[in-house]
Image (tube, rainbow, N blue to C red; front, side, top):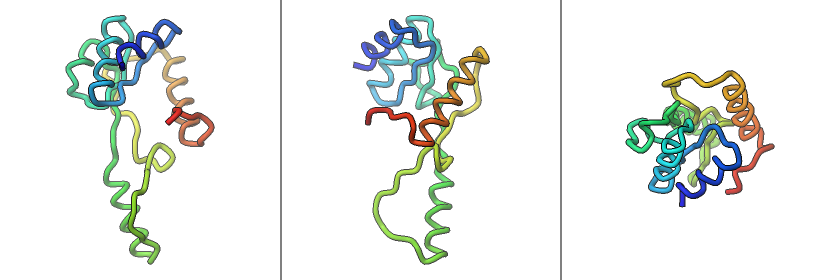
Length: 124
């Protein structure tokens, strides 16, 4: 499924494929590598990304812990599931392993900004 979707995105002109993780993400990364496209992996050690990896996602677990501690210290803590993402600076991209054209880097930043602002949806 991930490989087929990545190939569809590539056919539409995608320059960078993000394999979000799991076997679906691995398939997307493998398709990107086979097509000579750049990719972003969810796991820097993912062998499927060896030929295309530009960077990997980073999860800043400490920021989630810090948020919980701050809420508890302020008397606002409550149990339950809390989602933290780009808007909370809890996830991001790791160091780049190879360079991308400036226009691609600007587009990645634009996508991140739009996701954080809630003006771009992933469809999930």
